[in-house]
Amino acid sequence: DVQLVESGGGLVHPGGSLRLSCAASGFTFNNYIMHWVRQVPGKGLVWVSHISGEGTSTGYADSVRSRFTISRDNAKNTLYLQMNSLRDEDTAVYYCARDTVGVGIDYWGQGALVAVSS
Amino acid sequence: DVVMTQSPLSLPVTLGQPASISCRSSQSLVAGDGITHLTWFQQRPGQSPRRLIFRVSIRDSGVPDRFSGSGSGSDFTLKISRVEAEDVGVYYCMQGTHLPPWTFGQGTKVEIK
Image 1: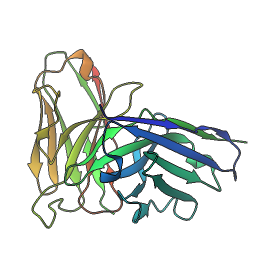
Image 2: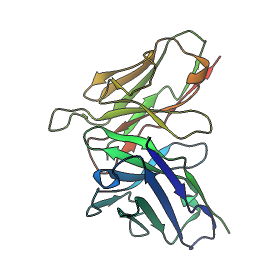
Image 3: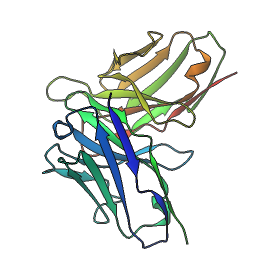
Image 4: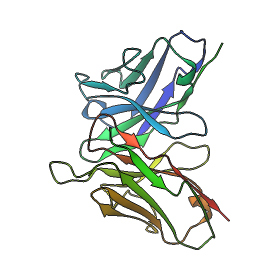
């Protein structure tokens, strides 16, 4: 079965940094594009970033570009999101999600809560 | 960026009755290969999103056949033929044609009257 398990969330002060991880299992990790999507509690889903299967191509939402960096370690079947210069408005549950070429996002992790507050 | 607009945002439904959610995109979602990348997700309270339908109308494995998707171009609909208690949650449409960014509708909250 496909499993995506996020970790690394927590409370951080504005301006601080945090790195999220997403451990993948049940599929050939490097064959899939991966995403980070976030959700402010009680609000809607917002795409944050994506990375190609080999890690050679990435994309970011305007709101996080230059502050967040997506990466992956295919040997460890793990996706990462390095978040720097965090702001109050980055507070959200962060989901990693798998993307199958041609059919899009199909599986989601359980999410990791990031709270930015002084 | 493609803007996805759902309506209604709140949908109270009587058990056993049908429900319908509209999703409109600010431009056509037909890709160059002729495929329309419109996806529907369900998010039950306290859970992660779950994909229900992709490419407008293809149901995922395990999704009850009371869920159906339809539409074309920039106008799409998710229908639940007979709402059950387990269908309570928020439903999102998402476009995967004009990328990046992937964009979601605001969500439609389905609740039981």
